[in-house]
Image (cartoon, rainbow, N blue to C red; front, top):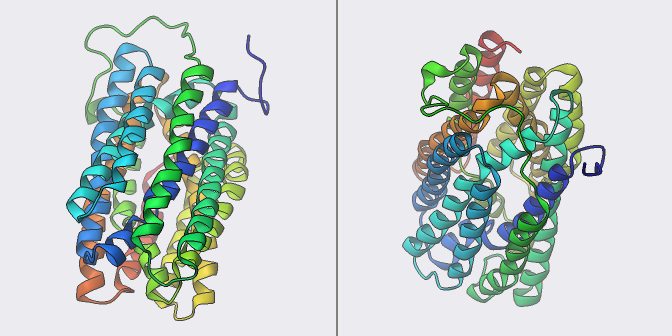
Length: 397
């Protein structure tokens, strides 16, 4: 029997390390893609929204496949390894991207890898902890994942400062350096996954041919309603590309934007574990409602902001929302579905969220150009409020 780490199965810790290293890499290479598109390649906000939404939808489609397959074969780790490896192979090609079509192709490859790995990885975490520890397990994983983002952004800020100082727009030279440095931790993440994460042997018999069933008819009614409410919320939760563009729109330098993202991720990391523990005691639904209320206020703030100091506070609040909701929502899914279907049901949860991001991001890009940079944030705040009412009225614990 393996010795516990932080009171949990070692799989949770090592999957957290894998996510930490992957986030160091991804934050360095992909977080500033909207500024690369806007500042270097001259793309419009509609194109930015298209790339952000389409790449997330590709992620969602392959989550559906990988979660179902992991349930069919009874194995999670092999699919997680394939997914992390594909993302790692895609990242160096951002060095060669010279058009928005090239960026879309590379981003699609990275999201394809994420889509393949996410549902099996979440199922690995859920399989490795008991029901009473589930919130803490997901909270620890999300905290480590987000700490990786903090490290990656701090490294990105240093690289950009050394390459271009405090410039208001991202340069091609700076971005190329981010890609070169960012590939290294991605490779390390795959090595850790291969060497230290172990598949848990299940006492239950393997799934029979034809099961688990795929389709809404097989779902618990509460899970169906939760998916509907999540889709409504996500229609207002466009790609985070627009939050980054909003910071630059209000006068921040590139280094300033990166440091705001550090604040965002620190708030995310600090709040993720306490939110998970709170959900074990207070209930997942109540904590999700609190998180969505924070989101609505933050998006309203992005719409109304006129000074740069306000944006720093809003990034912190946005990180708090992520910390409160991300891990708890995944734990809530595990509460609503049986273990034998967990990979399949995570696929639908991740799929609904990801597919809704495409229209959400296209609408946000159009609103930015046709109405104002504040318009996408008014829409997001309104839909978040409607989702809060929906989960309170329709979804039981």
